[in-house]
Image: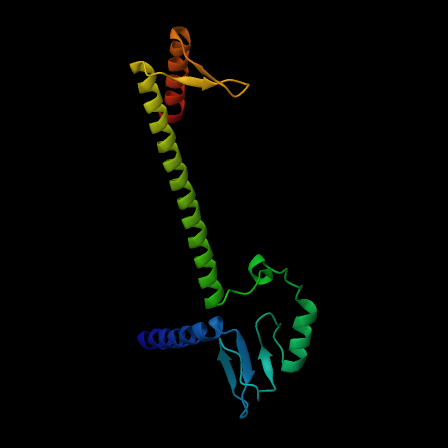
Length: 172
């Protein structure tokens, strides 16, 4: 009884040992000597008797026929966005793109700096004008006919209010 169970166990172990090789194999073929070969990689090109391949039913077939059958059965895959996209840029193209981006960023920075300098200059001029108005310096404005009209008391106060409003709006 013990011997028969040991024998049964050893036969079962031997059977289970062969299962993973054939279960994970996607390809089956007979080699030149007629032995069955199981593999997860395709057979060499000289093999003419393939028993099973991925997506093929069991049974011997010629690899050339299988290729034609697979091409007929397999639906055409839609092109993905990456496959349809332009090829990857060369190193020179990538360099030129980065260079253009750096130059564009530098131009934007220079434009911002120039605007900030103009604003600072304008604010300094407005503050100097406001200070002159408050100190009572003789100030005149251009008239429509090209002449100069000097500011009196009420006009000076209106000009001070207008200048202070511009300072707050532009320089605040």
